[in-house]
Length: 371
Image 1 (tube, rainbow, N blue to C red):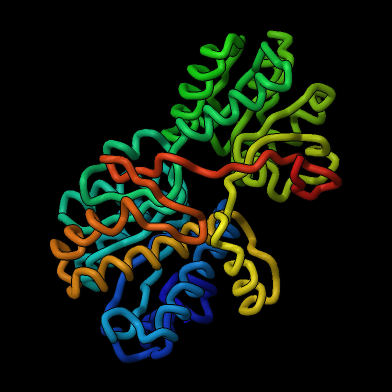
Image 2: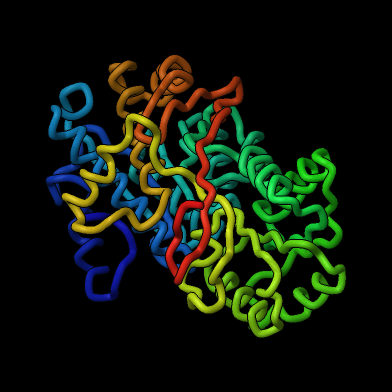
């Protein structure tokens, strides 16, 4: 079981038992780490996939003797995709549960403040899915197992330009993630010789984005490039279809996230990029995942959560200690050369992934397929 907010019927049980990820529900683990995931809210399906990735890593580590001969457990808290909730979660994990290392979260708007909190208190942070380039400034105790937006934006710009499109209309959420993606994509696309002729950063949570889309279409672009998630993405796709904008090409940065739960009619033919969930040595992850959960991974992001726990365990094994300062020293040695199911991390001096695998994908009859 996991310590995470769930249905009302389980809240009392979770509180009384202090259940953890692992075998024992009552006894405290010998080595306990923390994780913050979006288990509720717009990104809950991704959070559940990340939870499974963590669980799978813990199960495999403990099956091989644990960490330094001790059982590993991970306490999971829900961010609900909200930075305030995320900060409450990281305070609980560090001040009450005294974990020395926390992985998470999903969105950059949550990842950055929890990472800053951990670095301020000299506790190790592993970023598993936040991609804003502002993550580079979190600090020395923070590590990223996933590539940032400068890598995905460059890949997208080359992909769009390579297909012959020169005039782009760009739309993204107005936040750390969207602002950074808009800036990076425009920089790389213009460097190639293209032009972002119109750009909109929308305020999330609206019932309609027709006005924003009408503003974009007036520029008569060759292609619409966007990135979005949750209910906003569903509304955006519906409005674009209703306005007839689907008759021109649409390119989604993180296409699975952009099109999740949108009716297939609205997203048919959209193309884009997706994070590659596996490296050359990571094929076993899908096999192990299917065996445990009887279905394919729900997203590309569970494997990055899996790698974060494997990396943390390796660092603690190396440190022979769970003291935060000792873990940090070990991370400095282990992390830059660590290779997981997502491939070699190849971290730079700021502990950020320098190379990130991506897939070129499209939507065909509601399914994400390679192109």
